[in-house]
Length: 83
Image (tube, rainbow, N blue to C red):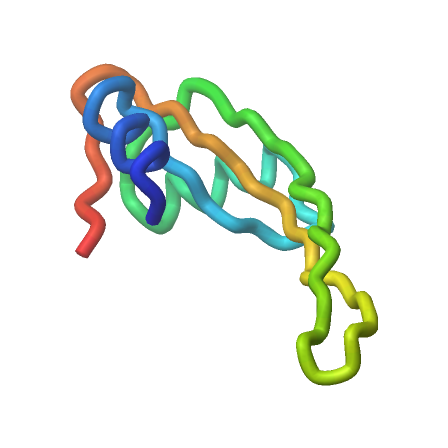
């Protein structure tokens, strides 16, 4: 949970999820609708690229792992309670 994702959920009814690399829009829509019992109107998907990291012990460079992120827009009036 980031500040940006909190703002999206409170102002626009959009929720951010980290999803499997093989998941597509239709699979994400079905999973969210089934898990949270809400109606999904839109799914935006993006691949977050890995970032370069430097190891402080030996000075060599490595990478953090990249991931796939989905921003799910819900129908007006629907809400997901996040603890």
